[in-house]
Structures are given as structure tokens and as C-alpha cells.
Image (tube, rainbow, N blue to C red; front, side):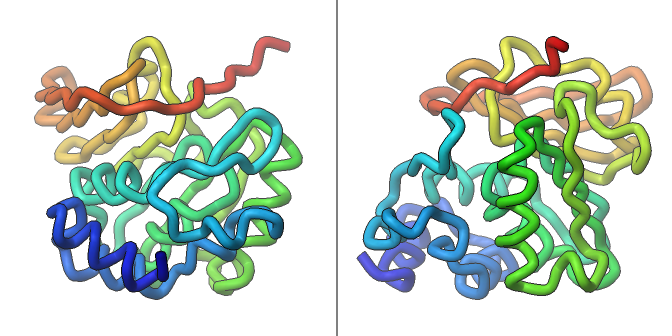
Length: 209
């Protein structure tokens, strides 16, 4: 399948609907974020291995989660589980020069991979994306608070610190076991949560050292 074919399939399936997210999928090429030996599979709608027991997520899943996150120009977003950097680059394309994406990754080799891949689009040079090595389950206090938080790796439960680092009116989209959880922060102590079933993710890697 071609890149355009994949995007049209996601639009037909109503997984991609928002124009700015569709444009990001067109501008940010998934093949720039996968290993060279998998380039022929760049536009297959399935997760692909990127090494170290991790994957680049299925395009359908990324589209679904970004649509529910509703990133907007100027947003400051925490992206937990940078992987090879694709989702962070998609977010950067949406938030633009006035936005910021903090991309956190536990595995040092993937931190370097994400930086190298995201730099292809000059988002690091423009200071739109910052890739940080760290334990994503603890969020990233340095840049808090965030308009949106998104995660690419599954946890058994949503880390409470993510809710603390989220602005009132903000949103979290994250996998919890085999579901996608969408959390809206209504006030400091009130959260509205929706759950969408039937997804599969790699586990969130915690710092156990």
C-alpha cells in the first residue's frame, strides 16, 4: 500500500477526520521512522518492530488516539514513549512553531533514534520538539503543565502524576492494558473518563533502577 492509500483507508474508516491531523499524516512520512529493512512495510496498517522490544504503533491506532487528543496549534504536549519519534513528529506538525512537544523515552538508544528521525523535519532545530531520556510514568515536571498528554505504551493504570501535570481543561489519551483511556480534566479534582476497548500496545517501561 502507498502512503496515500493508507491515508485514504484511514479516512474511509473514519479513523482520520480532522483536516490538520490528515495534513500531518501527509507531511510526516512513516517510512522516515522505521528501520531500513522494513521500508517495504512502511504503509502497512500494523505495528512494526523498531528494536529493544518496542514497536512503532499501527497507523490506525495513532490516528484514533490523535483524533481523540485533538491537538491544536500552540499546544504544549507531553508524548510518553517516544519510540522512533513518529507520533512526536505528527504532533509537532500540528502544534506548529508556537507549540511544544516534550517527547520522553526510557530507552537511551531509542532517544537517539527519535532525535535523529525527528531532526529530518527540523522540529528539534526549530525548538518545537524536545526529546528527553526519562521515566515517562513520572511525566516530566520540568515542562509542566501540559495542554495534552498522550502515551504510546500501556500501563496497568493511569499514573496519577499525569493528571497533576495536566492543565485544567486539558486532556490525556493513553493506553491502559488493552483499552484507550480518554481523560478530560474538568477541574483540579474532577476528571471525566471514557474507555475504548480492543487495542494492543507494548508495556510502559519504568525506571526500576
